[in-house]
Amino acid sequence: MYYKNNNNKHNNNNNNYYYYYHNVADTGRTVLLTWVCMLAVAHPLANFRNNMHVMSNSLVCTQQKVVNSTAKLVKLALAPINGQSSVDLSVHP
Image (cartoon, rainbow, N blue to C red; front, side, top):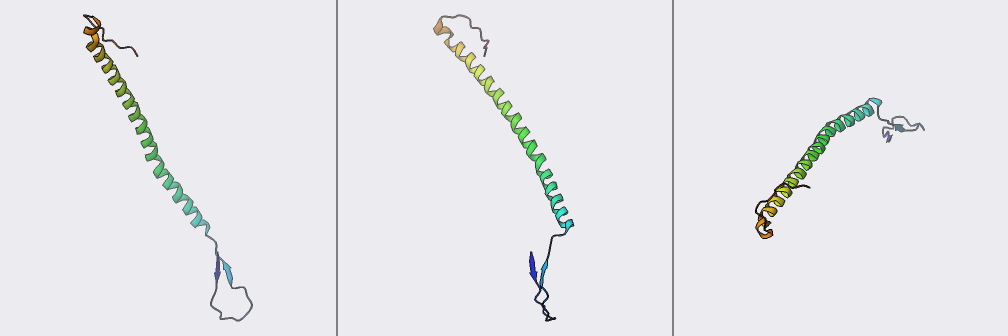
């Protein structure tokens, strides 16, 4: 980045443009703050991903139980129509 010195106290042909670079400490501080922010965000995201995995497994298990219960009820409801006096309610996937 260039900075022009507008203070012309000396009328000589010196170059009035100066280079300003970021200090190494400023760069290190920026890297450190970026790393800390990434760590602060990484754990909650991993926890959220794990919670979503557990929740999806729970939903799948619940749906399987509903399907099995529905299949047992259908067998029980259709038993008189099929002429069965006793019904085996075991459901095999």
